[in-house]
Image (cartoon, rainbow, N blue to C red; front, top):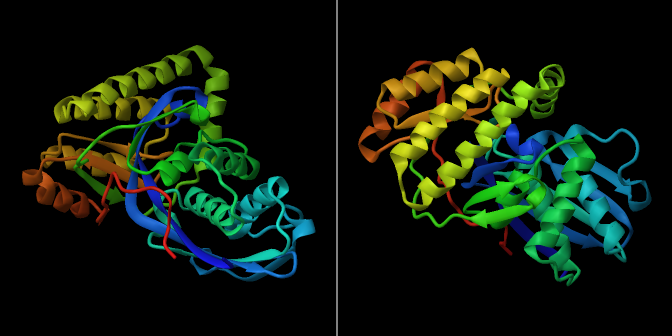
Length: 323
């Protein structure tokens, strides 16, 4: 086999943002929009990348130089994934990679982690390297840390395992939650969040107020654990109340925004069970848990205050071979 196509889903965080970076739990769901990565083996030890979604074209590099020099932002995760895989499982030749996403990198759906997972899964298949899901996670999570320095790995886990997961920092726990549905409305703010900057800003606040921030993290972790049990029972009203409480905690951390708050309150006023930001904050997306009867009204309310409602399937399959 010399060529393969792999896909992995994006993600949405249900509860647990920021606290999950510091050894607490979160709940994440995989979304229907997928990242597609085509990998083709080359005879020479070169790395080639075409990633038009992130404005990378005609990018080439010798394997010996992977991870070195000025790497374009859109190439960093894929290049480091190739480097980390081939360092552990050497290739005889090289690889040409093409990425194509069904979702904009602006949405905060985890396109970088999805592409990283696809690359590692694809290289394993092409080289007949038998990797378990946990081994793929470890390589992909290392790649994320190599590129951005910080991160919990929940988006990597969502891309690999799919469905809806209870997750603890670094993959210490990755537990699928059996769900038939997760009735969410998703609204995009129109603002791209800078995850690393937001994580660093919260870290600086924690340095100044360590006890207070740890109390917030502990509260968020407790909410996640309670929501985990509530989800198993399909107790949507309780899950929604916990989402609203979590939003309050995230506002205390300073990661919400006027646009997010407007969309969240509009959703609640229109009859959503609960609503909160999803992800690092500052922009990206908000989510609302809704009944079928209120879905249209909530969607219209989010749009009316300037949000973009995104049609998103949740609880979908993880990484898979397409071709």
